[in-house]
Image (tube, rainbow over all chains, first blue to last red; front, side):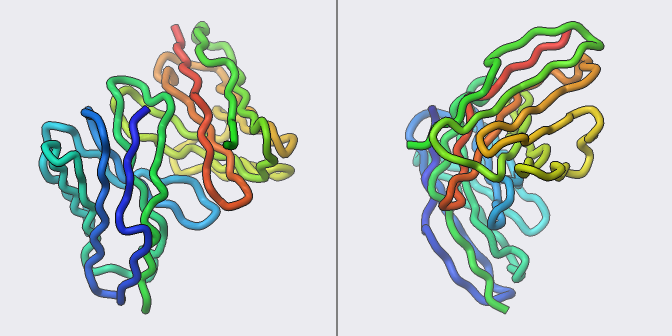
Length: 112
Length: 114
């Protein structure tokens, strides 16, 4: 199984500031995905970046991938209180994703 | 650690038939379970939230009449794909929420509709 580990485990910022979360993994990947989870809710897919991509944008989200360092970062710009959630990364297998293993996540708190 | 099982692990069915997938939490009770689907090399996509004793909550774009969810007990949720078509071929994964609000994922069910 693949595994991503997020860093930091908790992050507290003011509304309007940028939030950066990091993810490290251990083996080679085909893609890396970021998800968010609000308390008690399911994981919601945010963005997928493939191993041959270095950077990807989606709205206020920016994801980078450095396969040489086996790491990825998720940047949320101009954060809002509604961005308060836990953020997880997961690495993608060759085909179907048996045995998804998520790290403990980064708990982001955006203070108004 | 907490264990979640899914049955069957793989299923092939003919177009127009229905398929039931079971998700069980083996050593803990889960009032909430989630159902995801995944296409090859894609992310998990949340389909619905299954709550024990109440109706499931479906994500936008997921047809509730096509993907029937029943959470009849604290350890079992079922997903029935009704009148399956080839485009429903996918990998279906459930997760069960433990007491600490952590998610435990099942091993997934690969559905192929011919």
